[in-house]
Length: 302
Image (cartoon, rainbow, N blue to C red; front, side, top):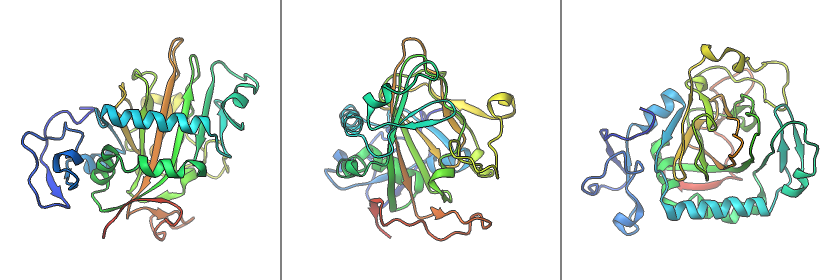
């Protein structure tokens, strides 16, 4: 099954209190704040197991309508207040642009229009509010199964009609954080078909780390996944606003091509848990804990 739509065995985490009657894994994986009027209780389902095994999980109805309104407001704020690394991105390159309109003024090297911004320091105060939305907290805690987590960065995307697919890449090549607790939470603000959604290579987070897509070193060239699709376990998920796609930093992924009448506004939030470690060349899996001083704490328990 692509989503968590049938009940699975659960166990309580943090608060020794019973779950509300009828709550199962289809209920956004967690008991929400309002059920306990501020006393946060989490249910852990098989999400952590699936994330660690597959590296990619679709969670339907992860966020409430009110949360989606907050997330959309945050996306728009990021678009209206561009950061220092905002770019127009193409199939094989990125060009810096100080904002959306400046990006539109750049040459049309290919059909469509694609824009992104990531890790803008000016967004920090609003990002701190976003990472504490109940749906976000629920997903992060259930995925890591831990009381400690940090938000590394936000990334906003705008992909307009007829934009080509994004090339296959791994976030880990730029984030430089390894270990199992390295999570991207991706959500589309618009309905998106499976063909236009993210495509992910299931299980690829368990394999090697390859070059950065836009800054290749030549030491570990990205394999030709698109040219040999049948050799890979590629999955994609049709998404409605409120759904989330979770994937490990090491999973190969790329955004699908948009149709003639499709615009995709999407937001990605990146989180690191206790098992997130710095990548050390020549010592895979053996690096020190990732440096967290500049990141936003989501939970700070032991």
